[in-house]
Length: 100
Image 1 (cartoon, one colour):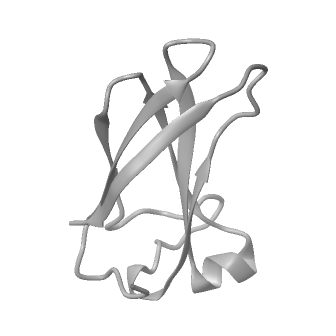
Image 2: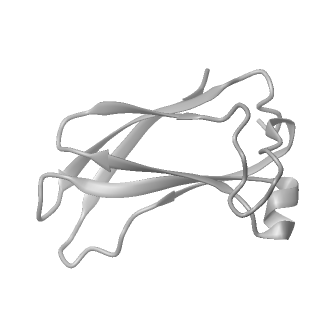
Image 3: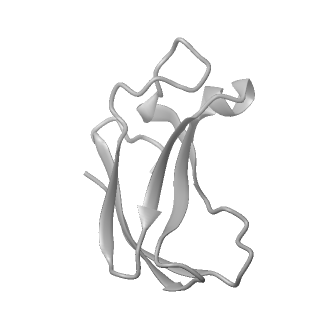
């Protein structure tokens, strides 16, 4: 949904299926409508392992990168998962994306 104002956390489960190492760094980025125009966002780094793990990102009262305003959760535009460019093949699984 576009309006996330009734929620305070984004949660999801993730794991590595195939990778050269036992951990992989990745990030989640959230943009509201104005943030897309302003090129401002909220981002949080994570580290996945080969075991399923639940990750969470607080969204309430989060200040946007390089901005003095907070993320407007009633006007969300996109959620992006960033992975580093691996030197070896990499497969990850993401599941159970939810707002709480």
